[in-house]
Length: 364
Image 1: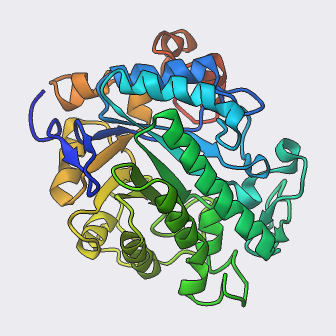
Image 2 (image 1 turned 90 degrees about the vertical axis):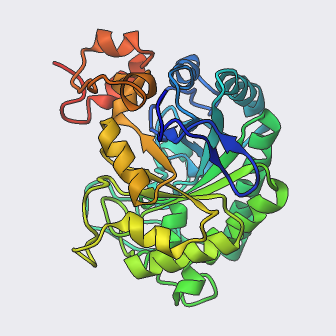
């Protein structure tokens, strides 16, 4: 291994990550219908830990039955998930990587076909798009319950032996829906101004920190601005939320940028990463994700202030990407791969089928 990507990263609570590289949290659909860890998901994640990633994140794991957003989603809402979670945590740690569970509730993006109930969100609203299910507005009881569900899921993850958890506050899922000025139309303490819209994310963060103190690692993923399913977000508001989360005790902020080289919409002459680095205390680490393929791509993010670089598609096609590319001299392999080639690198059949939704990933 060669510096600088191979250098260790210390979190503010004392836990040390072996290098600057993380496996991004990727939807893969390889667990059971009841949320129990599937063997293919275990193999997928363990293989990337063996490949040299210092930190390995699970897919978005739902903290409640009514928060399930996709088929085959890993669950962390019941003690019956503990045996599988423990197997996974042990396998990841066995390769020297930090295992992190991404905790998630789909909100309006948790369809009734998966949950059996009407989705709920910050407010009752409609969107003009095919298949949209109008949500009901959350009650105070809903919010008290979901805060407890995130808390309990974090405690369960800690009990299973994971090094940390990440709260999914990005991509238009529940925590992001409350941050949104368009999806959150409330006038009570859970809405109105930014302090109200950020309340749920902050309450969840504090509740998790209370049951999982340092050195257990706590991260939060956010979308800096509108993109895809995340809308109603403002760059300056996101910077303020990041500051509040630092005050609330997070170890790292995960910026989901989709493309690390794309300037912000609000400030077209600036990139998001340096703005967030300047906003946060030096001991709060920043993870970035978005079209990182080469060692030069990754090292450029370090120079801009990132501490962890999360890799998704490059890790799908090459589980040994850290050793081959980031710490070596190989050119990254690029998709598409055949189904057989993907299966050979521990991408299970359900994951392969899911990847066919993304142009250029799976060869015809």
